[in-house]
Length: 342
Image (cartoon, rainbow, N blue to C red):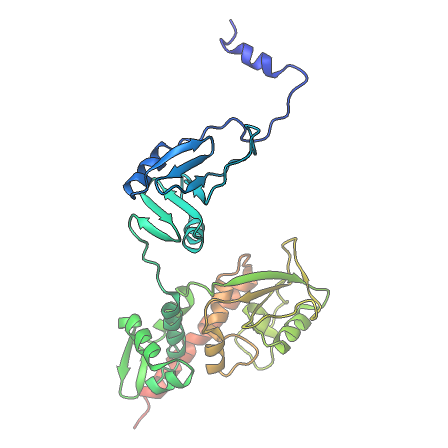
C-alpha cells in the first residue's frame, strides 16, 4: 500500500512545472513579536500581508523574498521591521544607527526603534581604546620596564598610562626605578597570547613582484610589515632566514594606493599581501617606541605569527624564536637592572 499522500508527489511530477520564486507561500508568524512590542509600549496591529501599524500611525513592513504577491500597489511604510529568530550584533548596530529600523528580539524581549533601545537589558559595550592602550603599556614594559614618564613620552597621555597600569593589576609592579613585569617574562607571554588582535579592516592583494619587493614598496608607502616577512629585513636577528612566506602582512595608518604600487585585489585567496587598517591605534606607537620605522614591534610580530590563518611549521618555528628572544632579553634586562653589584 502506498503512502496516503502519494498523490501529492504525483501532482508535483506533472508537466509542465511552474517555476516559483524561493519563499513564495511562506507565512510569517508575528504573534510573539507583537507581544514584545506591546511590552515596549508599542501596540501594533496587522494592517496587510506584510505590514503592521503602530498606535502612532506609523507603518512597519517586514522584508519578504517575493514582491507584490497580491498585485497591488504597496502601502508606504516608514519603518523596516526586523524580527529574526536570532538577533546579531550587525542588526543591533543597524538599528542603533538607522532611525527607520524597528528591531524586535523576541527571545530576549528587546526592542529598538528610532535609533535607540526602548525595551530590554542593554548590552554593556566595552570601549576598545583603553584595552588596546593597556596592551600597548604591557608591550613597552614586557622586556625592560619603563618609568611612568617614559611611557608618557612614547605618545600616551598620563591618564592612559594610569588606566593601563591599573588594568594590568598584579601583572606589573612598581620598583624604585620604574614599572616592570611582576614576574620576569610574564608580560611577554601575556602580551603575545592574550592580545585580541588589531581589529579594523583587512584587504588581500596580489602582485607579480617578489614578496621582498612587495614589502619594500609597502614600507616606502609608510606601512609597517609584520610576521615572517620581516626575516629579510636588515638588522633583525629574531627570525632565522627561511624561505619567504607566501604572504606579507602590512599595517597602515592611512589610505594606500595599492594599484599605484603594483598590486591588484586578490579574489582567489592566495594573496601575496594582507593590508590591515587596524582599529588598534597603538601599533605604530609601540613600533616607534621600539625604534622601528619599517616593522611592528616584536610582540605584535609574534602575535601576527600566532594568529596566522594558515600557520605552517616555519611560522611556528619563527614564533618560538621571537618569543624565546624576548624572554631572553627580559631575563637579561632584569639582571642588569637588579642583580649587578652596586
